[in-house]
Image (cartoon, rainbow, N blue to C red; front, side):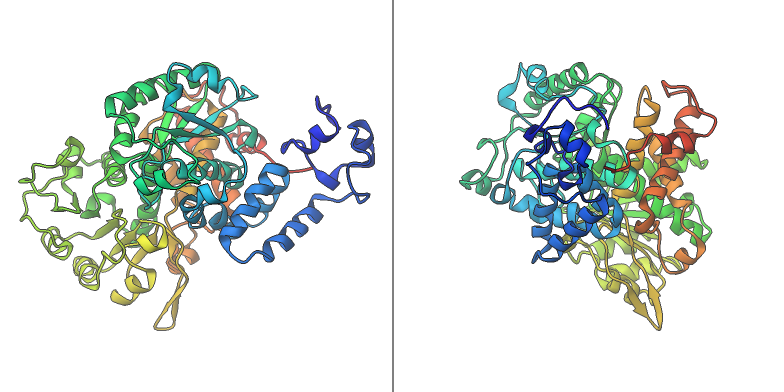
Length: 539
């Protein structure tokens, strides 16, 4: 038994130490817990069984989400044992799609604080405030402003569940030790007037600052975070699109930092594309790729696809020439004067149009990627238009939650007579066409970002760049067996997510070592070394 600085009720109130009725008689005596617990001494398996009974009695996934977060607050070992026992079942509850409902109702379901809450009112004191966190060995901070949550837009402080859920997946999927993870909501205000008027809203009832003011705030935060938590990696999550792109570019060369909405989404998309193209026996350079949506996610995916094409031998100009975009104002053609510099590189000398079907007919894509958050945007005409250009059209409606998806799996398979290579941002049910059952892929970032976190945790690199994410994408794609590919699966089975993530983390770590970016010595067996660093929930 390990020594604990706390005794009695202090132990039971510490989620990292609490085992409830899992404490042995000897532990109860040593920790002054006698009389504070029922007589039974239970195993972790018994606690998992009891938690499953509690979950079964809940009427909705939102209620199950609330229960699981309360469980995490009471007993984090049991929480992670439960999640890791059946990740395919519990990931959709602690994260997407249920977390969207948790965000929409956050002020109404709020129970107790999780992680930290910084506000723009703390400017000048961020280091002092961060020092209030009780430990210093924090390796990852996941921070959001709530400025662009899923497909929900600016929901300010209601976005607080997002970094909590993201970091829980670091552990549930890749066994990154939970004690080194810190979720933060960075409250800069919100443009959402309805939330500001809600009496149960938990955030600042103010509008956000200007870009220059925000940059000054985040400059101080980044410096403070690395001062208080040396070696920390900052994971930006769900910031407003323009803020996300600007802040990532601003800090990439100075700090260990990444943006999952940009780089993680791009990496998992490339993983799906890699598998689809292996099925087609084609390369990225053979494709014409069209994006529906031209925000930070589209730009991030496109930029990484360009890097992957260059890695395969294309020139930068040729790679960019194979990518086109369509947004709320129509096709990104060369005559538009409302494009940002990052959008202009994908503008084409093709006819202007506000019709996606016409844009598809003009550009003739073989790949269609949706990041528009516009339900139903991929009409039958649009999907069949892509199918006219290739025997196996690649259709990726990546927007989430479900009611934001550009099309369903059923539609994509039906409209292409089962020929589509399909993945979505949400998990759709199986589809049967002419007696053949397809298992639609879910292009969810959790196939890559937890593994990425594990690789960063292990190797302690000097910097993070897109090449590491591309290595992760290829590592994930290489784990799809032929039977799974034949059934339309472009991503690994969630039931074996931990082994998948460890394998992907190994590929990323090998890449980091090969480039000389690690600050630790290269082990003889990287996979075994990484596995030895992982967390196992046990009493």
